[in-house]
Image (tube, rainbow, N blue to C red; front, side, top):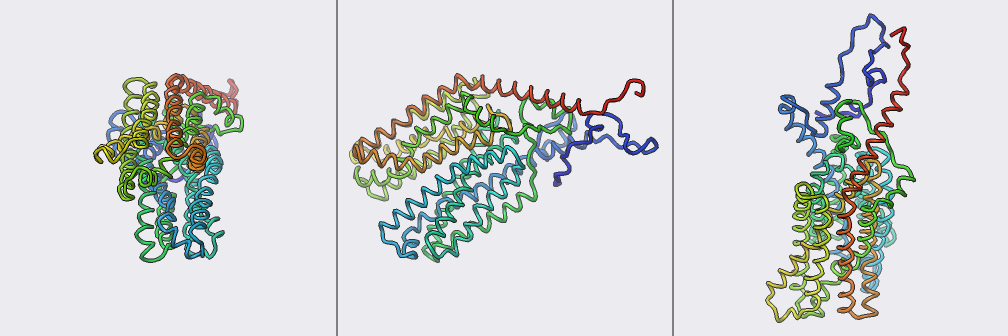
Length: 512
């Protein structure tokens, strides 16, 4: 059963307030009470449980509808992520097509386009995050994907470098804005006791999308030409996005929040109508949890700059490993990162649910700071004198430790920000991540020029220490910030209810 947007529109004032419907005249037959129907439609959409035998009868379909909605949102984001690294395997082929020399290839294709991809995606994330707090998010997700996959499809037809530059920049804007929008939607599909688990799966799915896209480009590009992978990725993405728009409904804002659940249950026509303001956007920086999570991302750009750009070459050129062996070490690090994202999300959520809310950020901070140990070992040890299996153990351990923060940071941001401000909060965090991806390698390059590779890498890896300390500091603020947010929500609902009662028509006692 598909639910149209009209099914979730607010009821007329008289029916919302429980007053008799007087618009049809005294002789008109009484309309059936719509309350149970409206409530059932919300439950079918989101999978939230009812009570008694009615709940037992419909629990499975409701959960299926909720997970289908979340699954479609995530599939769309995964397909969009497949576009992220389509150029990388075929840079030389693209350079030959445009008549670039090797130096121009590395500068314009490997450097300028990559920088534009991430650096333009950062402010775009903030804009799309703001829009996600003010308009229908399912429709916004559709248009964000079209913004990215339309240029991806058009890449097949480019005839000049600057056409390619503009199209890839548009795709970067789309990818930069997609993830905070997706996490915003998932925050209204899953409550605080399940968000970290769900977000860890989402990050794995989008990461897999990136890897699949790169593998596809590497396999198909040399056989056909470098343009075809863009078509093969774009067409399914646009099709799935159209299916998503036709078969899913935006979840009601705030329906998973404890401060609002009673209102949603008591009044099926209730709509949380708050929307973000510029004052609220600025106030996000006054929430300690937000500030700590935003700042830690700036320090993290340094070690990730080493990992993403320099590690393979350093292991091959400076540590004596062959290029295939050095590549294997970085692949194993990435596999460890996948395990760390999922395992860290699950374990962090368990600590939050069963031990203490503060245990989640403490766990995150300790693991991220501990990632310096295996990374320093790989940077400084004589890898030719130790068993290669031990090097792989170090790589997978470092990947696991360094990747726990991804899902947990986003879950904590969802937990401390109101439904109408989450898009911007998540966008700030995405923006610091994207700035790190764009600026991290450049900062590390500056350190290399000043200190040499080994000393520069040791200093850059130390960036995980302040990251871990700041995340551990969230343990002091998380529970307080969550409680403060729920109190603000309750106050807003009370004000919204008073405003609605004020707008009801006054009925004199004599005519009652």
